[in-house]
Amino acid sequence: MHPNDAIYPSLKGKTVFVTGGATGIGAAHVAHFAAQGARVGFVDIQDAHGRALAAAIAAKGQPEPLFMHCDLRDIAALQAAVAVTAERFGPIGVLVNNAAHDERHDWKTVTVEYWEDRMQVNLRHQFFAIQAVAPMMQAAGGGSIINFGSISWHLAMGGMPAYTTAKAGIEGLTRSFARDLGGDNIRVNCVIPGWIMTERQKTLWLTAEAEAKTLEAQCLKRLPVPEDVARLVLWLAADDSRMCTSQLFTVDGGWW
Image 1 (cartoon, helix red, strand yellow):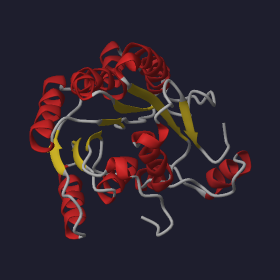
Image 2 (cartoon, rainbow, N blue to C red; image 1 turned 135 degrees about the horizontal axis):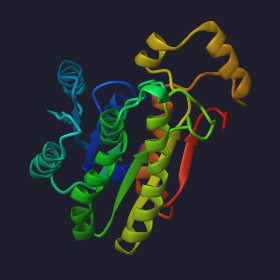
Image 3 (cartoon, helix red, strand yellow; image 1 turned 120 degrees about the horizontal axis):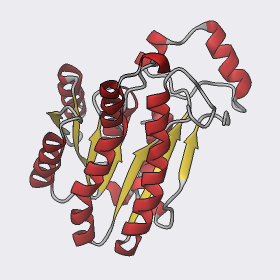
């Protein structure tokens, strides 16, 4: 955390569940929540990174997160991880549906099996994670659910139609659950990241030309980093945003 970053007292001791938390934006969520004193359970398929992150956070004297291996295509495993987190830390008050995989693909070669797999990886688990945590939030009198969409389909990006379709669906999922759960004081919002400079993005797609084109399109002339997203997520999770629900929050430097 930067010395000038906000501290949210309402997050101290809060139980948080993060999907895809071992690397990239997800790892920033885990680290920032732990720095607030929250108790974090997180899942990923990248075991070495997940264990290393939990150990590094504990070494700082912050609450050690609970890392669990989970392929989010396995809904039973996801539900079990939610239950284990609640058993260890108490009822989950914040859900961060972060996990996704923006694999490029040519529409001409997409099979039924590939399409179904992309829906499972990018959309389906968000619904079932909400289904698993919502009863705990209802019993507790409220909670915050933060889903992750994508700027890609808003910008009419091509080359990954299954991914963009799934990400578009998350916005519908968000607004539907905001209505269904609002009476229980459960807030449901969607974060739309721009081109965030994770290690994966830098390795696979960052070139001088791509950077120049993006900065030209953005109002702010620097590329966003995972911490820029995590700080917004903290605010959406905290009581400070208590009247914000059914909304899209974009972190893209003013690109879209």
